Amino acid sequence: MEFFIYIIIFIIGLLIGSFATLAIYRIPIGENITHKRSFCPSCNHKLGFLDLIPVLSYVFLKGKCRYCSQKIGKRYIFIEICSGIIFLSFALSLNIDFYAIEASKFIYLIFGFLYIIALLLIAGMDKEKRFISKKVVLYGVIVNFAYILYLYIVGKSNMYRYAIYLFFMSFFLLMNTLLLQKKGRENYTIDILILCMLIITFSGTVAFELTVILTLFFILLRAIKYAIKKDKENGNILPIGYYLCISNIIILILQNFVILGGD
Ligand SMILES: [Zn+2]
Image (cartoon, rainbow, N blue to C red):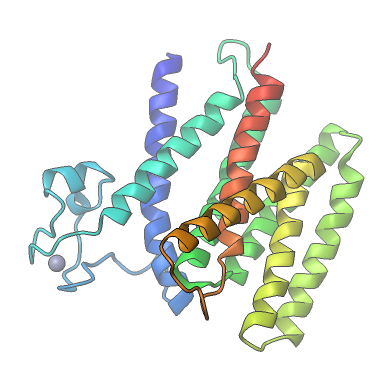
């Protein structure tokens, strides 16, 4: 029975990955993510249900569009599979005993999923467009707010600090939206700092510290890669948000395995 639950969670992860590829493409250009049907980017043909099944459609269509035979980017299937693995790992890291009903772990699982969706979307858009979507950050703030409200209701003592973080984050997000409408590097830096607050609110200070260390490590690897390729990065802004989000997902999963995996 546990096996089937994890299979379902993996499939949910694939579906979320499939949604993420669409959202990452549409949100930065202001397109609607729910009301418009998916279409092939090369022939614009509307895609049917059978074209949109994660992984399976790709395999059965041999990586090509059914209507125009244009190759589908490997990136799509890569994001879907990564997303499936991330959600499965997160669920496994909680070490849930499905026979004893552990409500607190189950609720953490749901909030964790909702939070990871925000990180995946922010990571994808930052990597592709060097763009931190305020809509997605706002969605993350709402998830955090609901989570902290839940912690308050069940009476966790350490929630006050996070409530204060949440208040400041909402304040900065609002100020940034209202006052600093300029585009460019300055605004990007502020968005990154707000993203840091989002991460610290959900994952706590220790996980945030580890996230920063892992982020720096990834940035170092990237610098080494560019140094070997003798590639100049001039004018190419580092996607810090992407590295922060990916690092935070990895740290959250590892931290859960360490803390919850033992019992
Ligand atoms: Zn096509």
